[in-house]
Image (cartoon, rainbow, N blue to C red; front, side, top):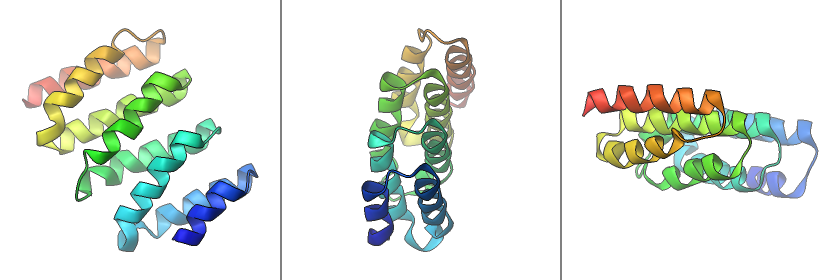
Length: 139
């Protein structure tokens, strides 16, 4: 896993990076915590929207199962604040997945989703609205 993480840092070739991300995702069941950590850190520096989106989808699926799922909320919410609309929309969906699956984080995530209701992009606002509405029903 360390070797794969180093590959993400050292090689800027898009196809290679995507293959490395796919490999990390495939070996996750045996190394979930480490994979989540490496990929969450990678989205901080990744310049490729489709790789970031793939990682956000992975975090949404596997992150709530982590020992400490709250660790990943900051990484995800940073994408809402710093990225283009397609990534922000994926980040909103990932936040909603955490809120749905981790009751202890729900209240905090609803506050973050409410902030997303002011986004400049229609898709981001719509996802935030649907997610916030659905999450509020769970409380």
